[in-house]
Amino acid sequence: MDVQARCAADSIEEVIRRYQRMVFGLALSYTRSRADADDVFQEVFLLYYREKVDFNSEEHRKAWLINATVNYSKKVTGSTWRKKTGPLDEREESGYEFSSDDENLIYAALLTLPQKYRVVLHLFYFQQMPIDEISKALRMKAGTVKVQLLRGRELMREKLKGDFLNA
Image (cartoon, rainbow, N blue to C red; front, side):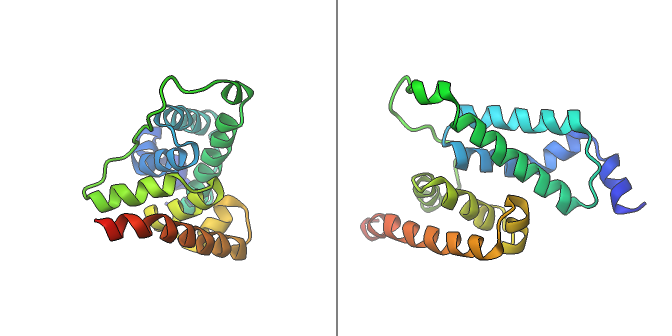
């Protein structure tokens, strides 16, 4: 069976199981809200189910899911309703719990960065995507991804410097 036929044969459940952590994690990194990330997750997989896109490869499917996640995340965070309302309480929602305190600290610092750095850092470090795949998925030049990774790392280094020195 060729790659395109195999991609078409995958059930929605199998696709969700394979990509749920990636889609939810990226949505959470982008929106910084568990409730919004849940909404994005549902919308992305609902769109995937409705569209029935023919994918050339698994990389094509992954890029489509990343692109859809980023687009829905932008829609959620940029909505007029969201801009005119505030949270019920000021506490931050935690989305993930990692196995170590250091990992939790790093992820918390990541969520404080500007969106453009959060997305590329999340894809690079949490999804282990190479730069060329990130650039294709986000439809930006590889050089732009490299610059955002560099600047994001610098911001992370500054944010984490005091936390790791005090630990």
